[in-house]
Length: 184
Image (cartoon, rainbow, N blue to C red):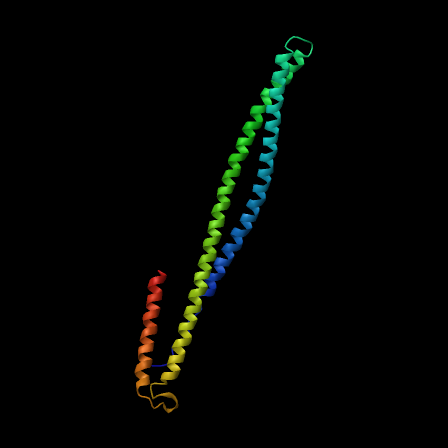
């Protein structure tokens, strides 16, 4: 049995693809976070405007009730009409912005979950890569100890070592098979 073939490191390509996907999603999440900040500010401003118009309507209604007959009654009615038009406009705008904000938050959560999954996949690939390298190193060490088909290296006198090395190789093959099965 000759020296085992060097394991080809095809992990690097997959890890690079994961890194690229992670970078792309991170950039998208940063952009989304900026949009979320802007929409949150707009929603807060519209909520403040809505509250102001609700307060103006309530005060104007109270003043109109107290001064329904007087020179200021007509001005109060006009102010009440403006407040009655502005209040629903701010409420609708606030609701629309809130819906958009909720949509962006869900997308942000999806991006965060995807980024976590990418990091987890990368960690698994790197772990698998290290295991493959260790298996390769162990196989080479076993092959070196076993010597060449012509005979043991360095005149090893222990005849049982070849059997032990054969068992070690079989254990390695079984462990690799188990890892492949568990990996799927």
